[in-house]
Length: 74
Image (cartoon, rainbow, N blue to C red; front, side, top):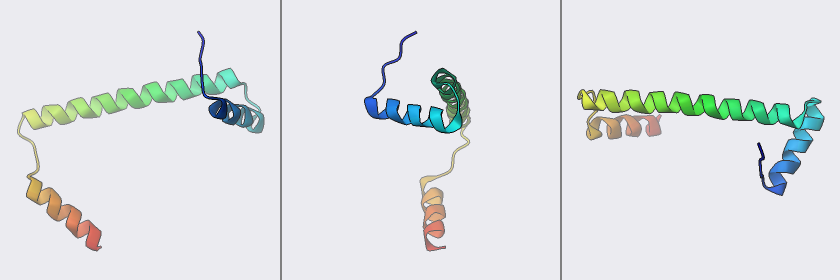
C-alpha cells in the first residue's frame, strides 16, 4: 500500500515518531484504526438517529431553540 501525504503532515508524523520512539508505520496504522472506529461509531449513531426520526421520536424545533437559548444565558 502506498500513502501520499502533504509535506507538512509528513514532518509532523516524523516529529511524533521521534518524540514517542515509535515507527511511522505503527503510528499510521493506529491513526487508520482510530479513523475506522470513529466512522463505524458515527455511522451507527446516524443510522440510529434516522431510525428514531422515522419512528417519530423527534424534538420540535421550538423546544430545541428554547433549550439552546437557555444554555446561552447560563
